[in-house]
Length: 471
Image (tube, rainbow, N blue to C red; front, side, top):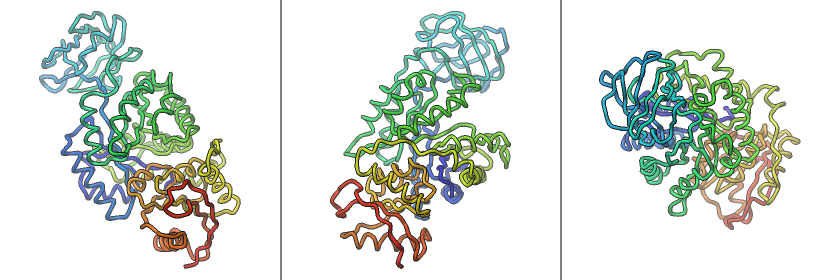
């Protein structure tokens, strides 16, 4: 079983209960709902399918709601697409119109305010380039620098431009309401530029004493200037290499990927590496060698999770894409090179939970134990143990269904639901029975258990126990 987790974007190729079940069996840990597409009704059906198929299997599968954010797009064209030829003049207007070879509309009403003469406008993930030659109240006049076919609703990127759009659109606010109603496990905030962008989202995502964790998507150059502050403000980050590569240039993405992962790991936060990981598998049954190396390098960089987008949302081989990613991850994680180059972070042992997590890693390593069992209501102790990247399997047993699902995104953690216990002895009996029943341990085996005693007192983790399985 891979220790790094697999995030799958669900879409037309993978929305049915049968396909979702196949993806879970293949290794999907997190289902991503992309709110740039689809209706609330569509997403509700998919979410309920995920929960149902996961419950049938007794597996933890988290749901990640990915907000569209202030995505800037072109409008529609009379024939669905146009050809832009180098040297041609082309106008982008904030007025509603059906586009042609001379002009098109945009979803972003502040475009004329934000750009100036000499700026470059990139279309369709940077495949087309325009240079701004004039600006008026409603129109941006350009000349085509790099041409090609431009289809309906393709994205606009503005490298080097300070975009005025707020971090949360009205659509995002409505979509957050959906997330609260359906109890999604994580929300990803798009186009984060500064830590302040996260504050409003976190406020909206806190209701009735429930707070949904926020993942900051790093896809704007401005975010790199305040990376540490953004990581501190977020519950995790996503290395969103698509838009980041368009605005930075693809040659700068690999090193930034490593830096973002390193800085996030230092702070003990979750990091997801995303975009075009197995892109060719949208149409082909096998990945390119370069894609296999890309997945492997993200694992070697110590990412917590890797994300599939079009491969599972609209591709021809969604299940095989997940199986392929799982095989690559496992191959790397088994290697001596991986173990030799995966360093545990230096963590400040400020409380008993931190200290016991550190001690658990040390004891498991020195005694060559195969299993660490973390008993936790919130999952915090399991996340701390995970940060040390132990070779032992991390089994987090919890009575909390929300914790059970959210831990599906945490590196190396296998979440297990158990019933409540009144005493420490009853709890240890339940742990033993669960481990044996699920083939997670064998009679006579020593396992390491961390827990809080007395049971039910709501204390921090305060006990580390080497326990021999008796059943």
